[in-house]
View (spheres, rainbow, N blue to C red):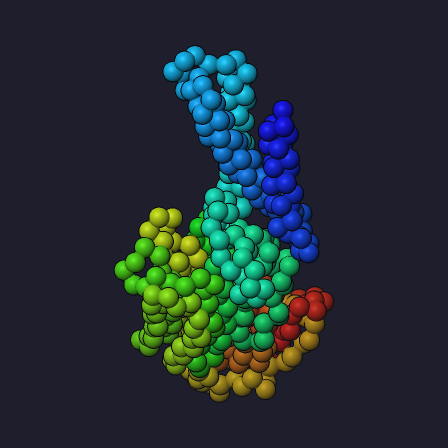
Length: 390
């Protein structure tokens, strides 16, 4: 009876100790609270299984010392059999519970924090110098919803800047794309390798990809079972640059990068960034970011129509907050939010009798120009600027 009481007390203490893992830390949202709950239940169950396993060994040893009955040589005492069966059932029950917790964790939290079984692996928190397991470290320092808890600052005009937390707790990737206007990316946070894919328009004379990449754990080096790898490339037209780095054995990857290429008129471009942990047992983990960038449209030069004088932009009227629907024969995106580019295009085309400029964000991320072969009626619209030829 006394030993059973010790068993129960040990299990309770293990459960309390698991709960104390997050002492002083408050989950940032309901998702993280759920993650902590599963983690603490798993730790308590592992401790309970270990305690019951030790008691099985101790019980067999105790009985064997006195009568050898527990191992079947001289028969067995009914109370001994009952006690051993209870302990073995306890071990089986805890293992079933752990399997359920692992499955529940895998459905929601694996992509972000890794395998729940990593709670057995110990590391030292470089900030507090306290020993923690890998899952506790991840739950403490890495938000489950990084965008919600750490919103990215608004990008400056002409560039896109995002800071992204890599899946799992082991690394961080930050990057800035300058010289391009990007549409909202596709992609998501699910999977071992998450990523973003962009489409956009080159908007400057230089395309630059810059940022930083870090890993929390040391690499085992090229050709090993576990190493960290950073790859960056940028291209515009025939211009291309790339940077590749694999952290050597014992190094925590910490690199800044900045690659730039000149942009020729009308050329298209692309960029790619990847920060990956290459693990022979679990496969790659990390971020893959890429973008495809269209070239800026070139305007038709102003030429004189046959038998007449070329129209100039100054000859065309400017009607603010006005739309002229109908009569469209050509439309295209503009490289910048400037209605004069649309007016110039109309002036350069002898078939154009009127134009309507649509501001950015109305018909797409960029401003748009509509050229018209006839002059139609006008309507009020704060999103448009229109004009006609005299």
